[in-house]
Amino acid sequence: MAAVWPRRLALVVAPASGESFASWVDRMALRNGCPPWTVVEALGLDVSVASDVRSLAYGVLTTPEMCGAVEAATGVSSEVVRGMHLEVFDGSVLDLAGVRVGDKGSVRRAEGREWVQFFGSRVCPTCLAASGGVWPAWWKLGWAAVCPVHRTLLVDLCPRCRVAVRRGPAGQPARLSRSRMPAPLQCGALLSGTVCDQSIPQISTSSVSGKLADQQHLVLEAATHHRPALIAGQVVSAGQWFAVLKATAMLVRLGVPEVLPLLEAPLDGQGALAAEAGGQRWNRAGPVGRFGMAPRTALVAAGLLAAALEVAAAESESELETRLMPLAAAARMRWKERRPGLLTRVALPSVFTAALDAVLGEQARRQ
Ligand SMILES: [Zn+2]
Ligand SMILES: [Zn+2]
Image (cartoon, rainbow, N blue to C red; front, side, top):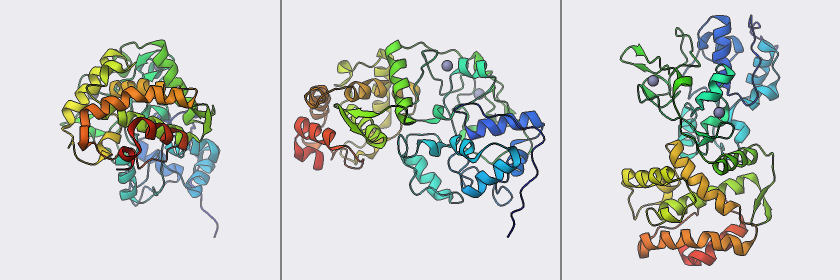
């Protein structure tokens, strides 16, 4: 059966390097003077059945059919189209196993589990202004804390309406709009019938250390396989490297507040970690899942990033143990005999589990 491709869009905008799919669609909608729904339909996505972003796995996953249709409509290659989706991080910083286009539940489950905002984003206002409204996909990652170029903390919330940036109307991911034109430089949250017109480039940010900016850069290189992943001098997979970061983040959270003075994290990052622990009312004897959840704010992410990268930077097994030791001691102090089984769900490299065994005691880890 011959496929019927949609007609080419009148005006195609070239995707920027690292740009997210939703950002590209929005810029194309502006150029063509039509709402995003119309662009997505012209690209050949199946919006007639459901224009719900979760059902479409919008910006998350592609299918070969979809890539072919987009290439036919725009001339942009399948590889570039796939590269604008979060699936470029699958196997490194994300695990999208089980997520399927057309299966809303599978998207929702991964959304709750993975360190990512499928339908929201953090933002560097200065980068956004400089690019004229390009939203990179990596701003969606849970590990996205600071802009390595401008050395500033990324922004989570619109200061005017307090809605998380790019989460959609009233903070809920929505259907693609059939009527509203996108405004890449504005907040755009829809509240009680009015649209928040906060200019994102005018949102102020706080500066961070050069060290934290470098650590963020390193995380991005590992996420995109642009550098070999090393733990204690041993080559591991990018997925294992991020598992170590996540496990260390869990260990840090288990040790709040005793662990805070021991961290290299910026002072306000420590405060954010303390506030997170205080605000969550975690069930202290409960499963460790809550400690592995995505950082809700860029500040929490910055605190965890600084602590985890210190551990990941250890160059030998003994150095790794030395760096884990104080974190483990703080976690122990807080949890005493009721500490939960730790870090069992992630695929950690053996060099890291051996170091954990040494500092926590084998039983603690397997409990
Ligand atoms: Zn920036
Ligand atoms: Zn707003």
